[in-house]
Amino acid sequence: MDPYGTEPILQVDDLVKRFPVQLGVVFKRTVGHVRAVDGVSFDLRRGETLGIVGESGCGKSTLAQVLMRLEPPTSGRVRFHGEDVFAKRGRSLQALRRSI
Ligand SMILES: Nc1ncnc2c1ncn2[C@@H]1O[C@H](COP(=O)(O)OP(=O)(O)O)[C@@H](O)[C@H]1O
Ligand SMILES: [Mg+2]
Image (cartoon, rainbow, N blue to C red; front, side, top):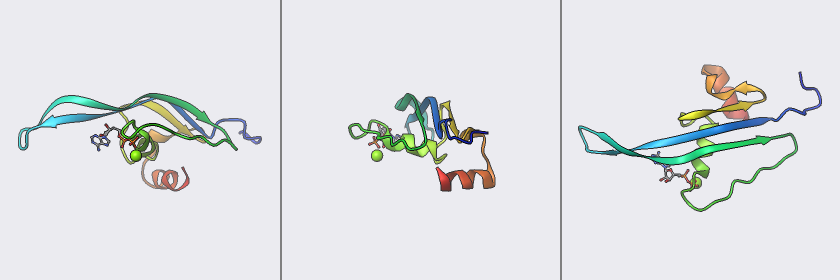
């Protein structure tokens, strides 16, 4: 219980997202990875506003997509209202996407 809202609403801990760089059409091989999100951590509390600022291609959209479970993470932990975002399935996942 957290009746006074002192716990962070969103807790992001060492979040990493890499995209494979693949060559070939039929026989694809992975030749490297784009480090789109590389160890992002922050807390967001009630009443706070967080701006994510950076040059094009620095990972802002990918960060948001991973937080919404539109892209799977490579590693890291995210809690929304204390619940593990990456453990959610089905209806619980749909509800998360609506509210986050
Ligand atoms: N689906 C994807 N597959 C491969 N690389 C991607 C994909 N989405 C984004 N990237 C790469 O990840 C990096 C971060 O992109 P992005 O999150 O869109 O940045 P921003 O929103 O800050 O402009 C870029 O190098 C981009 O090319
Ligand atoms: Mg973007």
